[in-house]
Length: 198
Image 1 (spheres, rainbow, N blue to C red):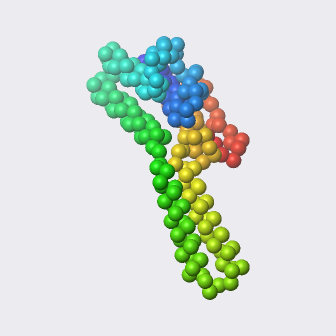
Image 2: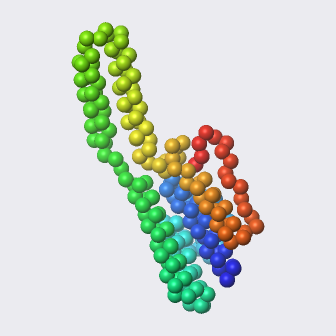
Image 3: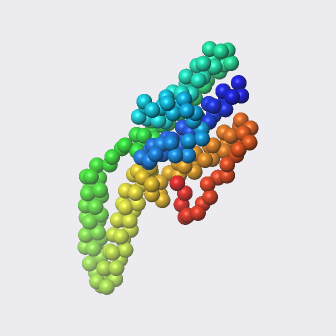
């Protein structure tokens, strides 16, 4: 039973890394090579969505364990529901990745900023121009910077410093899962050698 639990756990670790890499449009197997067997790789060859394929592998493995009597009906239902929740979470992340903000969003925002700045300049007509001009520049720059920040955060999986650190999160999950199965090879968290982590 220990071997089966280890295989399922290792696949789940591989799923975390594979999902993060897939969301970033990078090599899905990076960081997951040591957690998948040759048979797993053969099975995943026919899957365009490698992360979903890994979940399917665990589903099949759990079904085999139930058939052998290792899991009872209750254990099987609980494990299947857990994998279903993983699949739902993966779908939500993929929807975030594929959601495209319309170009009219940025244009409308810029238009509203211009209207605001023009209205503000009219209302500040009684102030000398050498006070008014820097004030308008500072205020409008703040709004444009906020808009630019929002644009950067629209896609949290684009390999930018503001991205969700899925690889770092996956390493934390790996450490936790390895500790839960009393694995002797516990890796260290990824070192923070930059001002951000991915």
